[in-house]
Structures are given as structure tokens and as C-alpha cells.
Image (cartoon, rainbow, N blue to C red; front, side):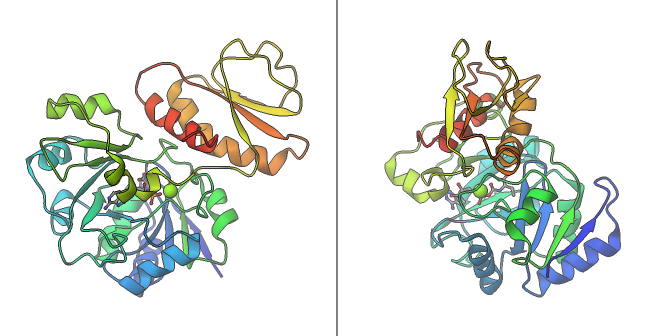
Length: 323
Ligand code: TXA
Ligand code: MG
């Protein structure tokens, strides 16, 4: 049985948070909203609890988890900070930015997938922060979907994948961003690397550090397993649509621009790149649940270089199976 409790995002009911905190402390699993996507949380310092996350998601145990801390001070108890990390933390935490840094021994090997580094971030959502505070421990949390499925952006999507597999879900409404955090490798502070584009745009990080983010080589990429498995895939095939293309029959469509022959094709039209990023995963889930006569989802390839578009292109490429 999964307990579901709805709370106000800005003033989460303390009784609900206290109950969720007790479940985390007892080694259980609680799904909760962050500003990016819903997370599936467990006590990051309890190896048995962390194993339950992998089991509930069907996730390969060599794919390490992000540790969610309530502030930079708690994060610095988990990993070895350097100047680049401190600078970025001061500017962007709480927020959608995750650092990979050398792990301290306190972090169990299960949480970091056997690596000598660990990933940390401070999420910008009052429910998430209250939960970490109440649980009195950092919370390991991957996205709260079955492995390989689109990340959940509301509680309904979490329950569709996780009902009966987890102890509790805190429903705090729809998330703010809709795609996951940006993950950067800061183990060598002079050569920071982009492991996964996401909620915080690359330029903001590069401008703050005064250096460009590099691309991980094959060794590093293998060590960030979530960046090489096929991800974010709905059960329907996903194909790329470019402005000017005609839409084939029996397809669904998502994008900012309207195909000329859209007609009454099931579609979601977005007003901006931010709106598109927010609705992409939710749209995949909607089409796979609603429209049985649809046999393919076409998604527009965002051409602009602003804000969330790099993260959006990454998620679209993975969903379409082209990286
Ligand atoms: O926005 C987010 O980041 C969400 C919310 C819940 O915080 N979490 C999330 O977690 O997306 P997950 O597990 O779905 O993705 C974590 C990514 C994976 O690509 C994983 O391989 C990478 O971070 N990662 C974690 N620890 C790492 C490490 N020590 N070295 C390299 N990559 C790591
Ligand atoms: Mg994920």
C-alpha cells in the first residue's frame, strides 16, 4: 500500500512531512516533488534503504544516485568541496544544479553505484527541503519513474509507475521545470565537464566559473551511467519533426510550431521553450495513456540556443533513441 498525501507547496502540512520523515528514517521509500521532477527518496546513508530504490525502479545498481541535501553545509559533509563548487553553490543552490565530486566515506557505496565520486544537490522546493530537514539525513533520490520511462512531473505519473512499490507519496502539484537538474563533474575544478544538460543553462555555469564546460570522454561517460542508457522513453516510438515537415497519419505531435497539416491530430502546442520543457514528459505519458490509435509521437527539434533548449534536445534525442 502506498500512502498518498496532498500538501500545499509553500506551506506543507508539518504532520505529513513528519510522517514522511519517519518513513525515511525507518528505511522506507517516499516520493516527493522537487523543482525539476518528482524524486523517489530514501535515506542516502542507509545501504538497505538505497537498495530498495533500485528494486522499486528496476534500475541497474551501477547507476549512481543524487544525494539531496538541505543546504551547502550538509552537502559538504558528503563530498569534498573545492572552490568551483563553493562558488556555484553560493550562486545557484537551492536549484537545478548537481555536482559530481570526490565522495567522503560516509556515503555508502550503494548510493554512488560503487564509484569514488558522489552527486549532490540542494533542491529548490519547500516540500523537498522540509522533508530532508525532518528526516535529519540526506535523501538519495532518482526520478520517481520506472527505469527507462519518462520522469514524472506530477503525482499521478508517479503513482502510475510506483503505486504499491513505495511507502508514501507527497503530492505537491505539478513541478516547476519538467526536466531534471544539470549534472556537472567538478572533480577537476580546472576542467569542469557537462555530464547532463538540464534545468540550469550551461551559459550560467560557464559565466560564473569563467571557463567553458568540457565534454566527458568515454571513460567519464561510462562512469555517469544515466548519460548512456536509453532514457525517457514512452511505449510509443518517438520521432523528430523539423519545421516545414508534413506529419504522417496516425501520429501525435508536440512542439512550438504548428505543422501545416496538423488538422485534428492529437497535439500539444507550447508557447515557449520553457513551456515545452515543462510539458515534454507529461505529454509522452498523456499520448501513451489516451490515444490508442496513435502509433508514433512526433516532437519538434528545438533549434534555438537559449535557456532550457540544450536540456530539451538531450531528452528528445534520448526518447527518440538517437543517442
Ligand atoms: O533533477 C534531478 O536531478 C532529479 C531530481 C529528483 O533531483 N533526479 C534525477 O536523478 O534526475 P536520476 O537518478 O534520474 O539521474 C541522476 C544522474 C544519472 O545520469 C546518473 O548517472 C548521474 O546523475 N550520476 C549520479 N552520481 C554520479 C556520479 N558519482 N558520477 C557520475 N554521474 C553520476
Ligand atoms: Mg531518471
